[in-house]
Image 1 (cartoon, helix red, strand yellow):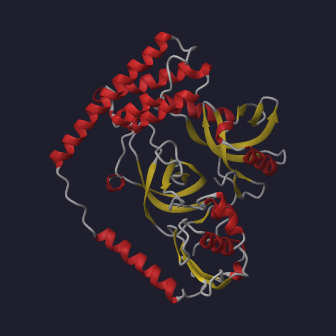
Image 2 (tube, rainbow, N blue to C red; image 1 turned 120 degrees about the horizontal axis):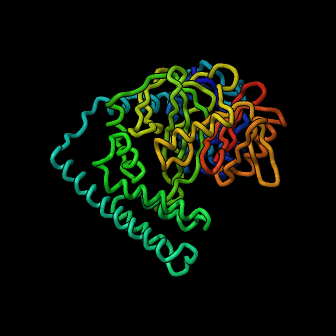
Image 3 (cartoon, rainbow, N blue to C red; image 1 turned 90 degrees about the vertical axis):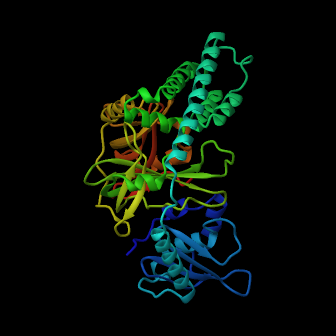
Length: 441
């Protein structure tokens, strides 16, 4: 049976702040009737302005949503309100109920479509045509990377202090898009926002990546895979899942949903979920995207454990993974916070990761027995012996004050990403060992 989610997890599914606010008004039993859950789905009818109530059903495993309202947001406020009611008022959404006919029909249709997709044979692939496309793209990427190296050298030759004559990097980024190297394009766009004192470092790292992109055939296979991913090559999920997978009981350490980096439409969102295997101890990062007005479908409650197979993207330090077969619904993790590291161990761990992947900005890390401290220099986390600064650009002020409120001056366990810019907290465990999400957007 699906464990009832926390309020933070429900709100993390919302496509925008307006949906979260509207859902709060529908989180009481007053507008709802015929609500129930069988452990795998939640359903109910919500009274609206019309004569017919809106019929809302949520399939919890994916999750997936269906509502008869005309909203184009996904999930809509009714689905979110129903989930909040289910989360906070068990008596209003009783367990063990039989789905209403309209809810059962939709759930059955979803199951049948899933089975049909599983049985559908993939379209045949012409190996020769695929090879020609790959060779053509490789040539374009190599040419774009070579041009980028020249542009960087020109900027250094003319001097870093004067940006007025150089112009913005957007035109160079567009050239990288034309060269089918979107990863290079994203890093180039970020150069205009880099402070003067960090510009040479960014130029050097980008030059190193561009050089590696022109010499992929000379690199060891894991490093070549890392460079390809950084440049912007993608790996088909079905192809990944057909290869080796890692089955484990994966604990969800945290999640963050935010506007997608780059792209033509900034309204797109990306959700990152960080997992750690109970048996293997491996770290994993799942990434899901949502279209405008829709939250990403993939959602796993922080602090829970799901037994599943993951397929990792190739690289020198595999982290990003695709979620494969699940074996049952998510369950509550063992009581208490997960084991963590000292600040010194975290710094050493990130250093080891960077040795494998020089372009790695941060590495998922659990810090143990740290206290958040606000000093004149800004926020820090300290374990009494060593201190790490908070990466302020990645964390809201509200999230940091929430972390301080959870701590109340006492040491606690914090999960986040640790990198050269500092530590970005995502989840904290309170004195009772309960996970507290530090961000919902």
